[in-house]
Amino acid sequence: MRFAFNIFVLFVFFVSAATAQNLTREQKIQELQTLGSKVESMRSRLEKMETRQEELEEEILAASDSDLAEAGKENASAFRIFPRGLLDDKISIRGGAAYYSFTSKTHDYNETPQIELQNGDFSVGFYGANFGFISDAGEITLSKITEQNKNVNFLINYRPPTSESEARNEYQKAGKGFDANGANYKKQVSAIVGHTYILRAVSFDEADTLVAFKVYRKDTDGSLIIFWKNIENFETPKLERNKTAANSFETSVETIDHETAAQVQNALNEKGLFNVSVEATNKVVILRGTVPKGKMADAVMHATETGKRKVRNELTEQ
Image 1 (cartoon, rainbow, N blue to C red):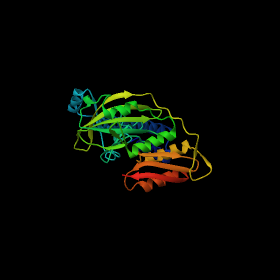
Image 2: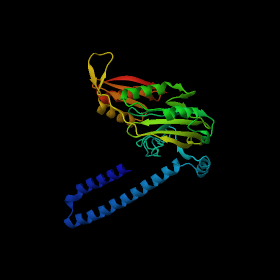
Image 3: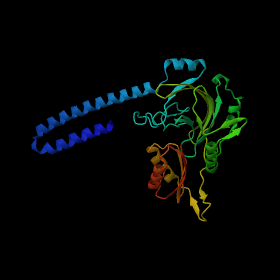
Image 4: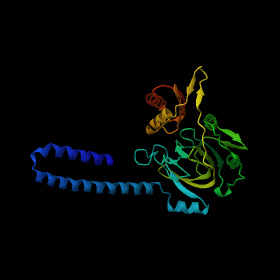
């Protein structure tokens, strides 16, 4: 809407400029006053529209009063999450309300996203070296989830790595899935109504949190109502960035290029490819993670154009 407002102002300016030479000074002053009133009126209308937009978004995202009441019975909080792609072009929140942060308690992808709903799956770990683990505890109430629960035990005692290479390894490990203490942990799991999940989300320089959440119900629009409770917040993790990276198939030493990696990451995010992790050196851009079916070629193309070097594609489609 701000774009439309700017176009209106430019239109008024050029029309005024075209006729200005035929007006007297007094007429120009009068026209200036008239235009000023119109601009203020337009600005006021725009502000009202933006306020209404924010109100509608809050109403759409909110869990119902009955949902909140049920969550309260379990001493839990509640939020609504939408499937990726359903609201992308209908809502101003980045990520289309398909993400949620248990730390900042918002759906905004810019505010430490820690869970995503896409294609019927939950996932964690979306950019940089960030990663996480999710364990499906099955049909169990949140009240029964304690530190002694087998799904919690491993995650509450887990200590994140401090080196970038080790963090990347943990990301790959989560992608494949693994067992520990009699429970299974993955980066991505099926979203099943009635099931409770344990999630540890490690976001370097932002947050490290462990939560339990339950899919309470699925609404008619495909959104899910989630009940959740915090188990523990850990010290903010810090990452010791690698200074150099040795390429296994080249004898020369490559230097890590964080600036290019960030540029490529932003370019992919702008195209809606949020589940791609980008690493870059002075010679190559490396893409890891997942993209929707049919989008792999687009991801590689955007990475090549932005990074201006060859791309090593380790993506998978889902």
